[in-house]
Structures are given as structure tokens and as C-alpha cells.
Figure 1 (cartoon, rainbow, N blue to C red):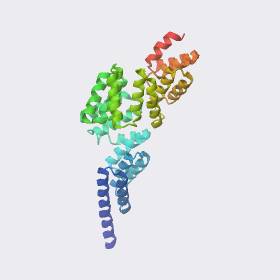
Figure 2 (cartoon, rainbow, N blue to C red):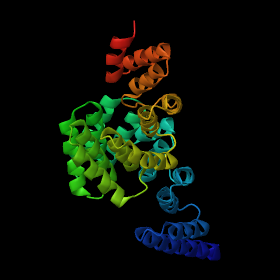
Figure 3 (cartoon, rainbow, N blue to C red):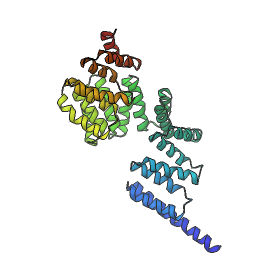
Figure 4 (cartoon, helix red, strand yellow):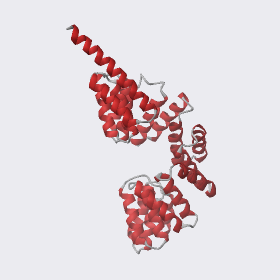
Length: 330
């Protein structure tokens, strides 16, 4: 009995040492090596929940959210009251579309994390995924009140302001985020989009170029730079950016819309319609998509389909569709 106890204590000590070594590697961003140490810790003492949590966080850094979810769920099996693991699992579940799981986990943490800026950020992200922008805005507001240095909450709230056409408020949030993190690609991209809406085209190009300097393969910056080139009469220069963006993100409705717009302006309506139809099939909220798609059908001698799309666009708040339908549809 005594020998067994001594062995158990030694295993716990070894597990703790491996765990700390893993944390050192995690801090140095050596995520694969960190995972190796966490697995050593788990092997020594399988009921130790902390290595499962940190293994899950490391897996997220390696873009393996499914594996991360498994590790985080195991941490909760070992300790159902492990709140940090539950919040991490909620965020991970949200990332892979497991909205019900994310919602249940967040509901269990409401009182525990009522003063946590990160909790309210995740809550806002969930509400956005559920199509509840008002609830999302309230959550982001709370996150920013709790910490005005929460860069992601500022960016996500700015996106909501942008969607509601409150461009000055959106710009303010994006600028604050960029002051806190000058390398924040999303803030740079979104400031460019705000500038385009406010007719600051050269200013917009500067933001997109800064984002591409940070990450040359960023699909959002590539798409946005391509759209800027389309809107400034440089369609030939736009195509490589749009095609590269699509390569990295084939299910982005905005990239597909912009490729459709490129081919429409080249007079290749058949190819344009192919891209517009793909974008529509994704059922993503894409500004002016139905207006542009209807124009392509109208120009290819299919006014019936064009009017059908414009009428759908009006329901979805597509401003271009409204004007075109009034002009061309009975």
C-alpha cells in the first residue's frame, strides 16, 4: 500500500513537471512540442485535467479545432467544474459550428464570468452566429466596458456598426483596435472598407496594402484589394488578387461576387453568372450580390431571372436591386 502511494505521488510530481515544461514551450509558441509534454503529463497522471485544457489550446493554435474540442471535453470529464476549460470549449465549439454546445456551455458560465470581457466577447460571437445582431451588440458593448483593450470585441462591434451603416462608429472602433495592435489585419481590412464607403479610395488602398504587407496570403485583404481595383477601373489588375483569395477561401461569398463582377465588366456574362450563382447558393449576407447577379442575367437576355433576383434582393435590403427592379421589372 505504501509503495503504491509513493508511486502515485511520484507520478503526480512527474506529471506536474511535464505540464510546466509544456507551458514553457507554449509560451515560446512551440505548440507541437508543448503538446508532446502535455501528453507525457497525461500519461503519468491521466486524471490531471490541466494538461487536457492546455493541449486543447495548443491544438487551436495549430488550427485543429476538432481535436481541441476532444481534449477540452476530456478536461471537463475529469473536472466538471473546470470553468476555464468550459469557456475554451464554448469558444472552440462555436468555431466549428457546434452552436448548441457553445450555448449550453456559456449558459453554465453566465454568473461565474459575468465580469469577464472574454466571456462577453464569446457570447457576442455566438449571438452573431445565431443571427441575433442586437444581442451580439449588447454583448460586445459589455465586453468593451469591462476592458477597452479587448481588440477583438472592438473589431467585432465595429463590424456590426458597419453592417448597420454607422460608418463613423465603425471607423472609431477599428481605429481603437489598431492603436492597441498595429498588426491587427481585420481592423486594417475593415478600415479600408469604411474608407471605400466614404469615398476615400486611395486611403482604402493604403489599408489593404498594409494588411497584405503583414500577411500576403490573407484572403480578406486579397479580396478587398481586388474589389478596390475593380471599383477604380483597374479590372485587369484585380483578377490575380481575386483568384488568389478564392484559392485560400473558396466559400467566401464576397470573393465569388467580385469575380462575377469582374467577368460582368468584361462582358463575359456566362462566366459571371457562374460565380454569382455560387455566391447565392452559399446563403451568406453579401452586399449588392442580387443586384449585380440580376444585371448579369439581364445583360444575357434573361430579364425574367433578373427580376426574380432583384425582387429577392429587395427583401434582403439590397439597395442596387431596388433601383434596377423599379427600372426594368413590371
